[in-house]
Image (tube, rainbow, N blue to C red; front, top):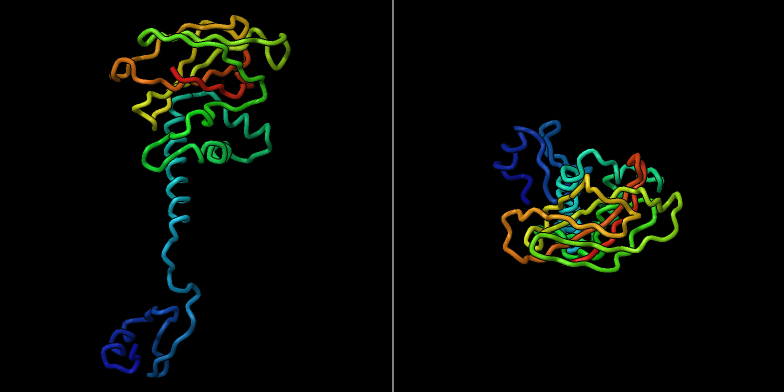
Length: 217
């Protein structure tokens, strides 16, 4: 760069110019330069871009997920139980690796719809007839972490809508029933499209939840 050219001097007359990691300015009629506080912007590496894109996808998923669960404080409670300051941070760290930028969930089996300290369900069988699904699970001993009165919840994704988590709540079944039959809304999806389901429990006061258990039908 020719810092003595008339054109460059004319530009500096209107204010400092940053270039090549330096800031050029006029002082006493002469061109001066100093190192910029921030160097020239480096282009992002592919790894940095993927990390940023995945974080963006996780934030979008979090917003849609929150609308799906409504007033349930699943992740806020889970964050408090683990000493994490923010519920979205726990959601991102847990599920970020299950998401593909621009497409949503790719690893349904490891995605967590719910987290918590209640005992997780153990799914023993599934049956599907159209949009009617029956889930069977095994319940252990009746105890504070696995009460027979725990409420039943089923989160789900249509295989064609991997960025759109949904939730069935107010299900007239309890943990102790060891089975439930539910109707999944068709959502204008093709008949027989795979469904990704997440069974989990909440206590009677919705103050504690269990981790979700995944199955596909």
